[in-house]
Length: 304
Image (cartoon, rainbow, N blue to C red; front, side):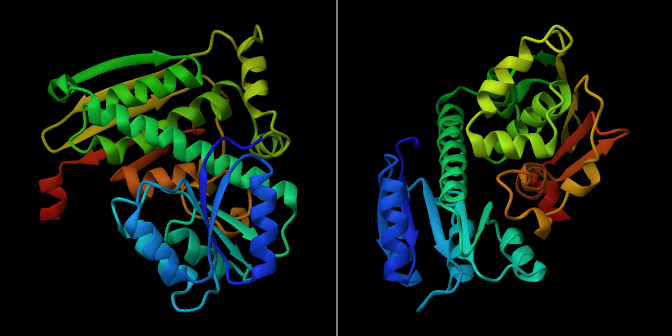
C-alpha cells in the first residue's frame, strides 16, 4: 500500500488518467486529475501545500509539461514537491532536459503498473520526509548558528536524519541545506558502510524490501560497528561539511551529474540534486568514502 498522500495527475488522455487514478486509489492515495498544464498550475498556485507528488505528462495542451515543471521548481512554495515525468521521449537530450529542470523521476510510456507504484511510493516517501525535516528546521531555535566547528558520528538512517536536521541549523539557509545533507548521509550509510550496490538498491525499492534489508545489514557482525563521521568547520566566507564512511567506496564520478541513462531508475539522483540545489561545492575524494560539501555565504555568492 502507498502512504496516504495527495497526487496531482496531469494527463490529457482520459483513458490513461482513469487507469492511473484507479491504480493509485486502490493503494490508498488520493488523486486529483487535470487534463492540461494551465489548469494544473491553477490548482498548485491556489493550494501550494495541498499536493505531495505531481505526476506529469510531458506533452500537454495549453501549458506543456516542461514549462509546468519549470514553474513548479522556480516557485519556493512548490519546489520541494517531487515531479514524476511521463513521456514517450526517451532520447538522452529530452531526458537530460527534464532532469536539469528538477524532475526527480521519469516514467516511459507504456509503463508497467509495478514500476509506476514503486516510483510513486518512493516520491511520496521523499516528500513526506522532507516536509517533516523542513518543519523541524522552521520550528527549532538556531543556537547552532554560533557553532564554529564540531565532530559527529552516527550509525543508521534515523540517526543520520536527526543529525541532518541538527546541523542544518548551523547554516544561514537551513531549508536549502537539509535535503542535501540527508542525501549524503543516506549514501554514506547504505552505499558506504552497508555496501548496498546501486543495482541492489533498485531491486530492493522495486520489491519493497529496502528498509528490511537496511535493518538486516545493520545487525551483521562485520557491518554493525561501522560509523559515519561528520566534521563541520565554519570559515570566514563559507561553511564546510566533511563526511567519511567506513565502506570500500564507490565510483562517485558518474553520479555528480543528471545521467539520462539512469533517469528511469527508482534512485540515483540524490548526489546530483544535492550538488545542484543544496551546496555551492561538492568534492569527493579518493575511492568515494569521503565527500566535502561547501556552502558559500549568501553575500559572497551575490558578489561572485
